[in-house]
Length: 209
Image: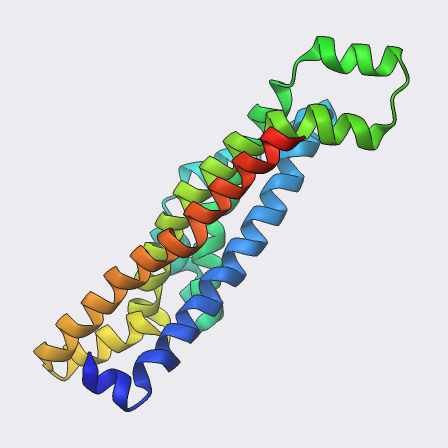
């Protein structure tokens, strides 16, 4: 690990992997939350999105990686799509379920008193929807990170996963174990510096609204 850090390879490959995972996570969460909200609020949207939801939740993400490799060829886009394949259905299902569980009596009372829609969203919708969605996304992000590393092993020319594959191909056992350790530490750091603070700040924000 010291050698990888000294020659700059460690930080270059980590940055590449992190960028891909964050890009896939942002796309998956944004599309999933939007689709889940529409599905919960509109029967027409629910009917249109239900086959897509069943397909995304039923197809193993590794199959998505293989199909993406066939269609797009090896590259970083395959890794991004793999992360999207994990987070999008989880965000969709969690958002749809959370929106449908919003207390209908509070919603009806807010409409009766003609409160502004932004007040309704902030004080009724978000406190009910945000916790389960964030919890689902946090759990899914860990899975997306693991799948992203696997996709790099199979399809990417760079990144931590690709470095593991290259070291294995050249029988550089020490580098294989070093990169494996880097992958584990990377996952731990993401959980400690990203996922836990987001959950804490979300809980504090929900208590303040």
